[in-house]
Amino acid sequence: MINFNPTPAEEIDQNIRTILTTVKGSVPLDRPFGLNMGVVDDPSGIARARLSSAIIETIKKYEPRAVVSRVDFRQMNEGLLQPIVFLMVNGKEGEAIVAN
Image (cartoon, rainbow, N blue to C red; front, side, top):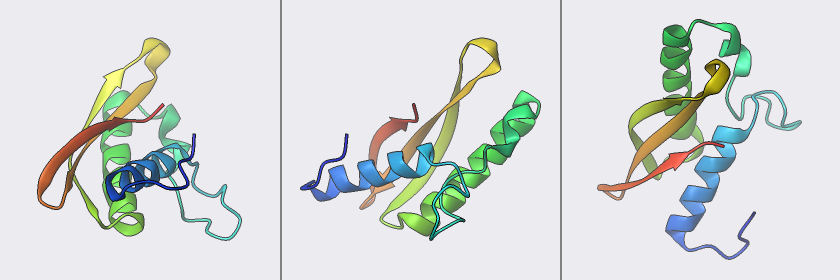
């Protein structure tokens, strides 16, 4: 759900969730926006490394108010990886954002 009147913290959270759930190439006027889902067939270790790097770089580019402190992954059934992103906002550790 989109909040059209968010606080600054809610806005950052909302922007990060949008970045993490958008497939790169799917936004017509901003094709580089989002994450490359081409790693889905990579072995788990390689996919984790590539996704971590992509998450850090994409958040740095599109939401510079937040700094990724670390990226963890939850291993779901059938090999699905669910990223859990830990952020620093204004020098303070923010909540973890889990991409759904």
